[in-house]
Image (cartoon, rainbow, N blue to C red; front, side, top):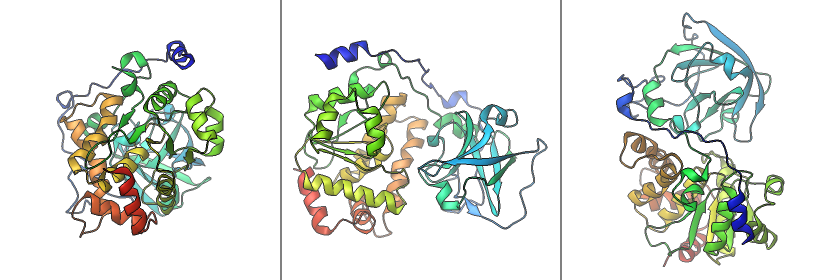
Length: 392
């Protein structure tokens, strides 16, 4: 009853308009390819960042801006000392800019979200107070040794060249519970299905112990589902302690030793991501009592990849995996299945399986097993034990 009252009395948050993006509202233009696209790359894809010693790309007439790196996040994103408002006096979302620092040079679109570009691709993010540079689902600072004090120069490469892609991929959502059909959708809470997964055994959700409007709903739904084991991909002991207080059921699980904190980054290519994932899966093997909840902060990116691996291990088809992955975008952003936006975003998870597998990987399961054994450090016996726990 107390938790239900908390839900009723939960403060209303500022309403953010849903994005009702339609390709018919976007000017028709050829997709912009950054750098020399390899023949196998999709025409609209950005190509990976490269270190280059070539002559600098000529700046546009608008000139260039210089800024200094002041901070790097634990995910490898770097923040500069330039206000976004100042940056946007010279550039706009949808522009493609040339970024130079030392001997490193790459082109990147100006966007407002990491999901506005393909996985592993560069971006200049301008939705906060200060300009941020990142690789989507990857570590910019670690990959290119960019750190505090480094000077970055940004100049125009092609004005408005990314507007079409930005219009398709840009997403906005509401933080107001009243704008969602039910608690499950608002908290992105659901049971995994597909393949031979046990019914109502594996769940995913947003963070039930985060300081936001969704957490108490996820905490309540976890209790209703009878969650007994939790793999928390996002938190450290310090971050959890700062935000867990209102989430009474989650606190009970944590105090009882039923929650593992992995404090993972977002780059599945990094050894640290894979090793921490291995720890989390070993925790499930050691604590097979279900139901099991897997979550990061939104239950969308890190949780999306981990749940996709487990679905694949259970024999789910790629269509089933993609459908579950995209459910988070349907829940949060009202992305319509089958739309250009849905199809574009779904490449995140199909590209993920292509990257973690080998040329001999015949399906999602073989790619998942390869990644879990060669990168996450699980033995064949542990893979078998995990598969037995999560499947009928």
